[in-house]
Each structure stands twice: as C-alpha cells, then as structure tokens.
Image (cartoon, rainbow, N blue to C red; front, side, top):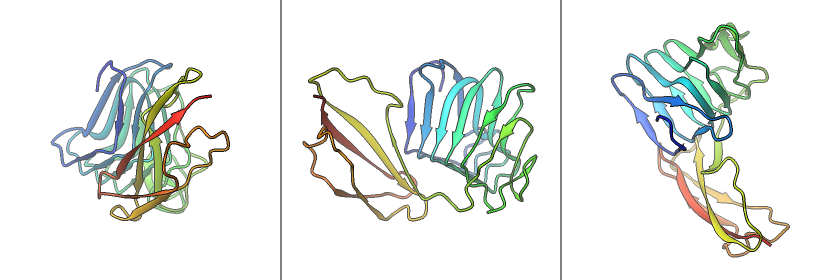
Length: 212
C-alpha cells in the first residue's frame, strides 16, 4: 500500500514469503486504516511493515509471523489499538524510530500480564518507545469499523457507510447488531439485524442514512 487513500478491511493475509502488508507514504489528515484483518504466519519480513507511513491499526489479529508482528520505521505516525498481537517470533511491536513514541494501548499481547520485552509482562515483546498501558487482559473478540475514520455529510443528504464486523472469539458465528439512533438518521435500515461472519474475513454491511 503506497501513497493512496486506503482502508484495508476484512482481509486474510497469511503465509507470504516476506512481509504480509507493507505500508508507505503518509498524510496525518488522511491516514491509512488497517482494521479487522487476519495477519498470520508471514515469512522473513513482518506481519505489518510501516515505512514513513501514517496509519491507524485497529481490531486486527496479528499472530505467528516469522519476524515481528508490526515493525515501524522512518518518520511514521502510527496508532495501534484493540488488536490481538501474540505468538510472533520477533517483537509484537517494534519501533525503530529512536526518539519518537508510538501509542499501542488496549491491545491483547497473548497473556493477561501484558507485553514482554520492554513491557512488564510475558506476552509478545515490545521494543523501546512503545506506550502500551493500559493493555487488555483478555483476547479481544468483537471488532467493528467503517470505511471512513471521518465522514463529512451535507445537510439533507442521503448516503451510505460500509461497516465491517469481526469476532475473533467466534469467527464463523453470528452477530446481532443494534444501533442507538436518537436522531433518526438510520431509519431507512431494518434494525436491529443479524449478520453471518466468515472465518478470517468477517462480514460487511452498508448502512444508509439521511442527514437532516
């Protein structure tokens, strides 16, 4: 992924010879979004390799990569949250930027004690300059994300937004979706609804809205 506006959602990236996903190029106003992906068992590189990149990494399963789960290099702007990062052979998160902190809070590191390495626990290791507190003491199950981190809506507009769902604790189960809609924007949808998940992919559904 390079120098383009991109949401990378609901993919299975596994057993590649080198890195699973390599991301470069950045805009802090419009970062890449990597969410609800299964990234497993990738080879000599890393699960996710970021070089001079701006990215949000949320609600992914990142495991069993031959080197690091996530490696960050160059002048990158990265936020890592609510991921399951465990059983990677190198670091769970490796920050090679010497004087820049990376936020990696509310992740599960494979153990309730938190990350190892420069962390305080025995889960996947982290390097220097990774902010990891608080962490999740349990594996993260349900993840929900949209194709936009921020969406500008004109008054009176009818439009849609793509929502992606994942449940890492029951990847082939069903989710029942409820939406709090006090303003009545989503009245065109049949709510609540159930959605069937597919292992490693999850499920997607468009929600339609009418802006007042």
